[in-house]
Image (cartoon, rainbow, N blue to C red; front, top):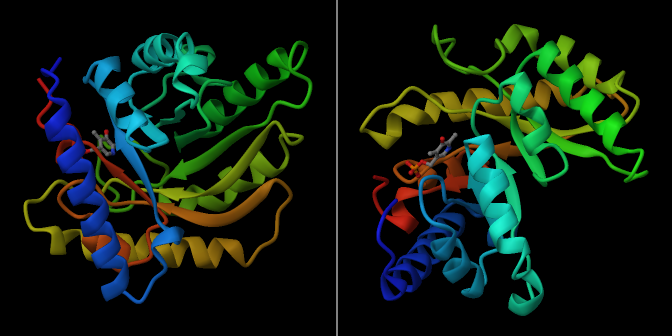
Length: 247
Ligand SMILES: *Cc1c(COP(=O)(O)O)cnc(C)c1O
């Protein structure tokens, strides 16, 4: 866990917001149409609290236990803080960890298989005994460069997965797509993958399905969010540029 420096966090959040606003202006886009998810994985709950008090609402985690523990830590003080964080689950999700995440995450970015979608659906059904209207919002993670070993559904498998969500009786609601392009130093290397994800979203959106409304593109991290904004990202997932290096 990295050491906390509140002054640094305030300065970095401001710089990040300015950089996002500048990139939106350059792309001719409304800054309101781009949401920042502050990726707090492997940073302490105290850092989340500080950034929350600076006005940031959306936080991303990619380990199920960490999401559970941090959301519990901050829920205990939500009343005192007067504001609650909105949690995003952005990491690979094992089926046995589904109970830790469903109902806690406002948005799961990493649905990538039929078995995972049905495990989430089953968990929602179970929780509905106590929470009747519960719906789990999600994105489909696409393995956009078709890298072996990488999470995400194959682009060709997307329609089948969307059909399954449409058939899940409204337990899941799919809002869009997410990708994690191949790791490269040059942010321009991500551009073709971001563009491909946008095209995939638009072509999949032509077929109307219940419980599916494809409008979100979760793409862009610390090193390539400007390129992602240019290519139509609506959700950025930024960790290092805000919280600093992870230990
Ligand atoms: C860690 C992580 C991020 C944030 O990466 P940074 O380079 O620290 O901005 C974004 N998306 C996913 C899926 C991650 O796991």
